[in-house]
Length: 76
Image (cartoon, rainbow, N blue to C red; front, side, top):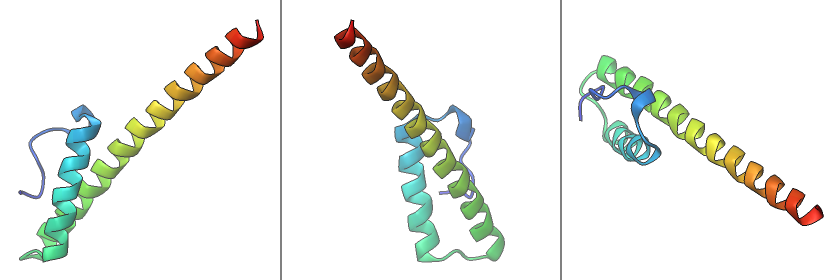
């Protein structure tokens, strides 16, 4: 794995971001040859984690909206 994948983080699906994040963490745990490489991996990992959180928050909003709609239908 290189310090940064060619794919822009904001274009990744949840699964792709999660899988790459797992690889970044594994590489960080093994130790990098240079501090600069470690920092680049860390920054990519932070961006990937934020992307995953963005997807999860979006999913939660959709579930909440569906739950609210179902509740409103039940009350009608």
